[in-house]
Each structure stands twice: as C-alpha cells, then as structure tokens.
Image (cartoon, rainbow over all chains, first blue to last red; front, side, top):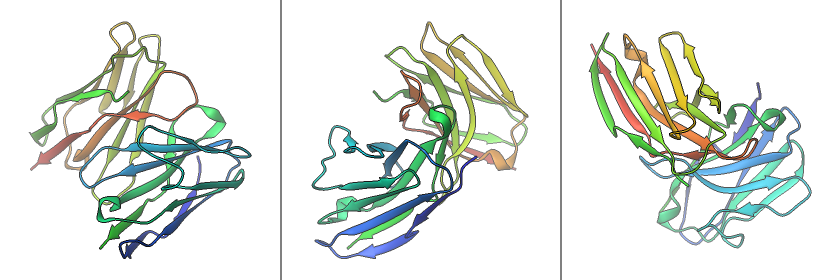
Length: 114
Length: 110
C-alpha cells in the first residue's frame, strides 16, 4: 500500500488568490494524478503528473489555472490560481503502485473560495 | 469517457440486498469499485480485469462482462456500515488514471 500525505487538509481562500496543495508519497511512483471533486459530485481528473516531464491536462483544465510540479518521484504540487468561488472543491492527489492495481488517494484538500 | 452508473440512489433496510451497475461505451481493460463516506477520501473495494471475472469481498462482490462493457456490484445482507457513495472507475489501458462514474448514494437504515 501507499501512504500519501496531502496538505493543507482544508483552507478558506479569498477570490483572486492562489493556493498550492502539496502531496508527499512514501513510495517512488512514476505517475501521480490530480482529481477534483466538487460538492456532491464525482471525481474529475485534472491532470496526470509524470516526473521529469510536463503534466498532461484533461479537457477543460489548463496549465495556467492549475500549474503542477513534479520535482521527484515522491512529491507533487497542484496550484489553483486566481481562484473564484467555482473552484471550491476537494482536490485529491492519487497514484497507482507499479503502474497498475488500485488507485490510492490522499486525504484530500477541501478548498472554500469566498 | 465517463462510465454510467445506476441507480443514482438507493435506500435499504439493514439485511437487504442491492445491485449497482456501471456501463461504458468504450472497451475496458478493468473496472474498479470504491466507496466514499462523507468527508473522507474514496476507499478501494475491488478491481476486476477483462476476462469476465467475478470477485468477492465479504458480502460485497462484483462481476465484469467485458463484451457488454458492464460491471455490477452486489451488496448482500447490507449493514449500516455499507452506507456511502459508490463509484465505479474504469480504464481502457492499464496503468493510467481512472474515469469515474457519477456515483450511487447508498443509505442503509436500521
């Protein structure tokens, strides 16, 4: 299994500001995934972060709004830029060990934008 | 492409059974099932690989019909702890991110 430490666990932010979410893993993994879960909704993939290359973004998500860093095999950050109330969501980092098998999730970061 | 889950919501009495369905318009390599309780991250239940297998986890089991691109999750003799939202996650190629359905809200009452 994998232990994923994600922080902050929650935050209240002002419109127009940016917040960086950190995700630390106790195992080396090639791919990490960032999901967004809006209130009462499903999990939507934002991007796939590979170590050593640019993140791959899903339709509807852009790098300027959600820049991602992946400096090594155990760490990644997601920044939510120029936030608006529509960005109020839970953001989850996730990974799969060995490239297959179950998807492990961090505890999530609950952002509220006022 | 997002898989389609049904039903959207289920209310059961303790001890009753339920079936949650998940279907995809794309060929699938695997189907995953997760349960999420309010305020918590999703928890893995099981994975089914193409080949039409069926798996069980205590009183929760699932099947995967590769040809129909469908999976079903079976909850038998439900317990209060089964309450939560169930998501199926699908992948067409191994090792990548999952596409999740909209979820099925399950409430088990005493």
